[in-house]
Length: 250
Image 1 (cartoon, rainbow, N blue to C red):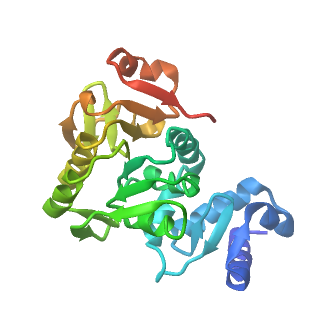
Image 2: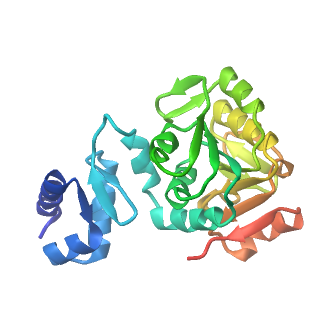
């Protein structure tokens, strides 16, 4: 069965039940789970469904900002491994900052049963943590539609009013020279979260390690730990500079 026919079958199932499961689809269509995952990722990238950990759900644009959520589905297995490790660092009673990174967003699925408070500028995080044990504080300010996040001076002032026990932040690049971002807006939010947190974790896949992008906005002293899938050899320099490195289980 070629991709167009599989696509039609998947969309039909979504319209019927609102969700699909990878294992069930593979059995029904008599193809491998790897092929189904690839199909679902492609359909998610096209905005035709919302990719979940074990399958997909029907797109309803009135409920969630799916373009961002679909981005978070890219390299999902690695991101989930990183986020499982991150979730293990969170205890009931913690107050945590979460920014608008696509990896940070995937942390939501692993913390819904924790009695914690999350302070965030991310609309997808807000939507995902509705109706669960987590208490959510929404940062106010100017909406960045593309990033589905709140930025700007008012957002920074809002963050400064709070103190978190832990921050879980994304990054566009990190090297032994420090932290890198692709925009001043995101750099300022990351800095504000880190400065007002007792302990700061950077969540990043191996592709961000050693990467230096447009804006070098802070040294490594801004953070305490990195959670990543990168190998030990690439992380040696960070450990020597006093950064705690937690390697995600794959």
